[in-house]
Length: 113
Length: 114
Image (tube, each protein chain N blue to C red):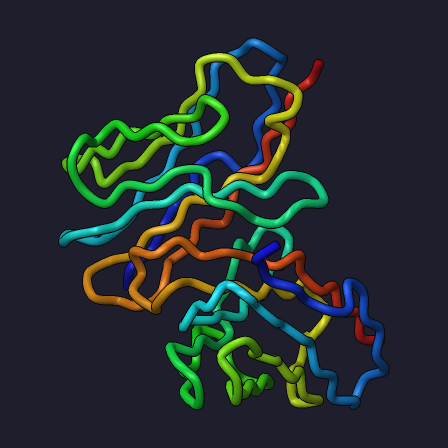
């Protein structure tokens, strides 16, 4: 069965630290990849997405993610986090002709000022 | 403003009662979704609808029912058959049901059943 793994369940960082959240998926064919973010008290919203082309994609608020096909990975990065990045982050994958997204369990990020 | 509204924000019910959660969108999207979010379990798909008068079971449809009589509306009924209904429920929509489309989410309804 297709699945998405987010390796870090809880991450605590200080402001200005660099961030990398891992996401791996299990599917050998064409995939569409997403990172969503849920800030405290706000709607879940799209952070960035990859469909094709340049495997390094940039999203909102200085986030970026790199698709590495050989590693089945789509890790999220930010060079310098801010307190306002405190949120829950979800990786999601659409595989093949599936009309559904497969979601990771989420990573809770807390950034200390 | 375009978006998705869910009401109410908090809902309390006694065990054994059916309860309906509202979801309305004014984005003119064809596809709508219901997810359940539990701590540490991510988002799990309950039902989705690709078009009016059509809907498909997701991964955890047991104990739930939906209808899609209008493009704008996709209410979810949590029936008494759902064994563990207390959860945070999220409604979403997308232009169409292809998984490459961004999903837009509502604010959610937190249901507590005692």
